[in-house]
Length: 334
Length: 304
Image (cartoon, rainbow over all chains, first blue to last red; front, side, top):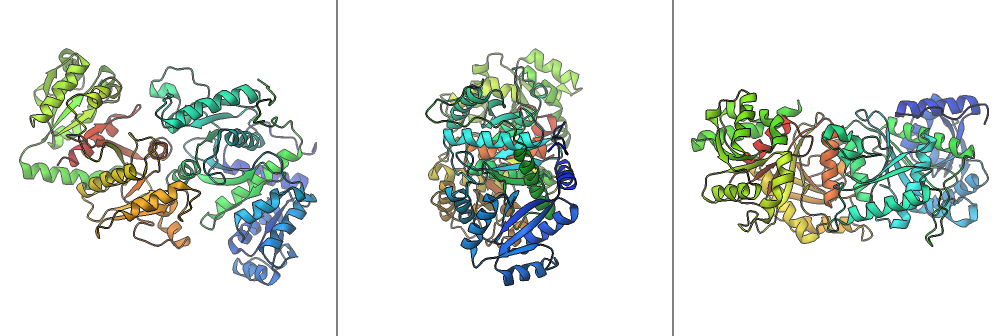
């Protein structure tokens, strides 16, 4: 990896992320993205865009006739990518997992198959791709008015995570932001208000989570919460608040208590705040990229660029966060 | 652009004042920390739709008015230094028909609002309970987006969510929207027993059967507000792509939508508490004069 030094300064926008992915492609060669069930024209258009920009190359796993059809629909040359033939979505998931397990893939991309089928296969113990206790979704947003990246998690995989699951979600999110060049990310735990009130359960959960994060991983992140969104992104002194906040106004990560809370917040910022969305599932040996049909081409390409940067980071072998152990004997690094 | 989205409401209020032949009497509760936003009263006074009654320390209030070059004769000042008695006097004025709406500055909210909520006089007397509603004017949207409940219930159940929805529908009707379209938000558009908010959203939507009111859910935010996203995902119904109002599954979500709007999306906003003897204009911390003026406008527009 000495051919390309790791980031010296944090990436602050989707343009930075794309530029970094291009740099990785230029120096190390194009990252390989394996597309599971590649019969999805908008995914193929994004993969073609990424190849042309020098972000990544792809291996398409799918039923050949339908992949060709999708390539034609996306106006991508039929010989643009290597195609691995399979019969159906289950076989596509298995073949993708085999390729990733054999080190043939830097990133896995979901195509025309159910997310649950892909994740279940990738995370079965057969392929050695399971890394942390669980995988979780990060929506890394590039928000014009914020001036830095904000990772909202988890709005994509876990509906109502437990305390223990939130710990792993936090660890996964920290890893993603370290890959963006932020050595010790500031993590805000979401709440409707910043005071802890028994009548508002999410504030109590946030307080307990922050205490546990501080106890176990204080060397890897700066956690704080509960914090309402205005405090997450606004300097407290502007709001006339005098308390000594560590994360308020400069959060890198916003961790929510439910899939709805995070999903809806991310969508509000995309719809109304001009945010560019970069989504990735982390916690497995390879980043998993999911894009939606309704995502813009920019969002899709940025998501792939993010996954390429995360793969590059993880392949460098930095010290990972110690695993969270529910039994309470997790390593105290604080 | 964004502020123009409030014009229909402003016109509605001006017309109603014309019809009733007198401005709306609004009781303003302003603590010293709220004086910087007193400028919010200028436009309503100029346009003649508000007759303000100020509650607080008379000397301090007079000095603050003088600093803004207000004509003190335009104001009634009710001298009430003690916070609890200030609120009692306020409620008595409402009961006597002397006030149409209330407005709390952010500082006064912190110091006085609890007395209003806990008053023996039961100011918040609606069978539907109380509800915080915001109207958001985004620069990239052609109409207001209303959000509830952003103030009261942390984790509403089905019945409470129905009451919140009825409050929002009533608010939309009063603000001049003939056929309100309301989306019950979740992360996805299909019912999924594993995601309780989808089931609750669907159940609440089923309780609205009026032909002129469209309440649909579960619906995701992008599909509720973005026509293109709705078309791409082939969403059906009367709300997809054209929601007037949205309801979050809990307090955190609704508040976060509001806060993201005003901090990161360049939205102008007003907010109001309904379910009391009169509507109450609200101000959040860091809200400037403009937001307080918009909140007052909304409160006045919702007067019965």
